[in-house]
Length: 134
Image 1: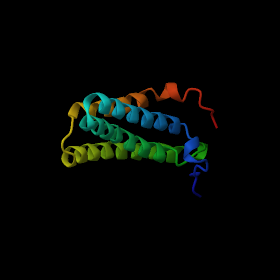
Image 2: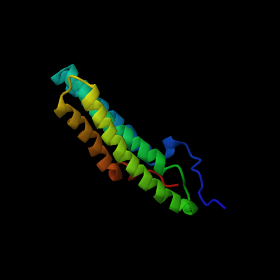
Image 3: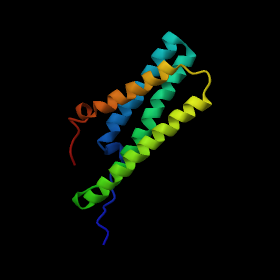
């Protein structure tokens, strides 16, 4: 008997969704501010840096919230390990792709966008504090 219970609720009802949505908004705002004050190259560099953080975070959230319920505890923990490993690999691959494929690039803007999105993720407990529990 398989003890894993697939999560039947849609992804937008998971606690990770408001965090990912706020990360998307912060990424777009940072890119817009960089574009307005530093130029087009800094704007798309900041956008790419934000995407380097947002895409792996989305992958991790999708993996972790695939299962629900007490019987799925083992599967959830396993998904957390695989999700975190995938997140690290995705981050490295995306950074390499940005460095190799995009010219010209403003390095400070890439890291600024990346760190801004990571800062939202680091404050995730504050964001989902009022999120209703299942």
